Image (cartoon, rainbow, N blue to C red; front, side, top):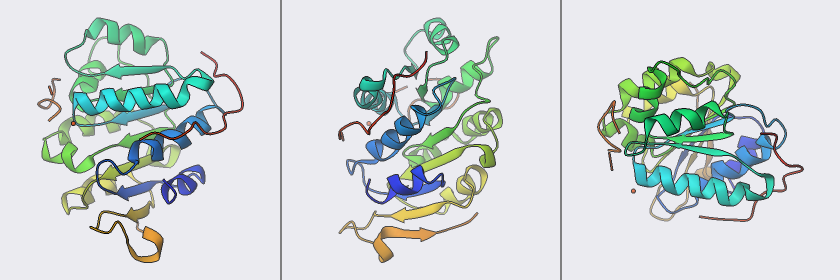
Length: 222
């Protein structure tokens, strides 16, 4: 959190490598909520994660951290009603937490959610997103999002693998790299460097930290 949050608030794309349980969710949730309080209209943040369980946990963290400012979230995963999710997406939630297969189903449906005003895209557990075969789903989703120059993209992974390079090049723009994945949790220069540029089975939905809320200046507009 101490490494990532300042760079995110500066508007930089971030590629973070850290072990599960190291505070990654708060590292992206807190700055997203801070920025959201300044511009609370439309779908502001989209978090993609590989499993239903992780999606539920992340949404719960956003609801807890964002409770003081009235954040409105939407959970888009398999095993829940597509119709209810479509109705919730139509209400313009501030943050959508989704598994790639189910979100792709919505985007290719008769009334796809609008992602054109998206400000933050988070790819959580990105190594698992790739190893579980979501490349095609991610491609469809990225096509519907604003181009990298018009959004911030935050990619988090437990490991930095060669397979991540193509996703990094496709989704990120001149990211700051934080590699805290070593056994001691340390990396050179405070973990910071500069780099440039299954849930469920793909296409359908299946079934893996908390600090105080940042100072949010006002209630969000719904």
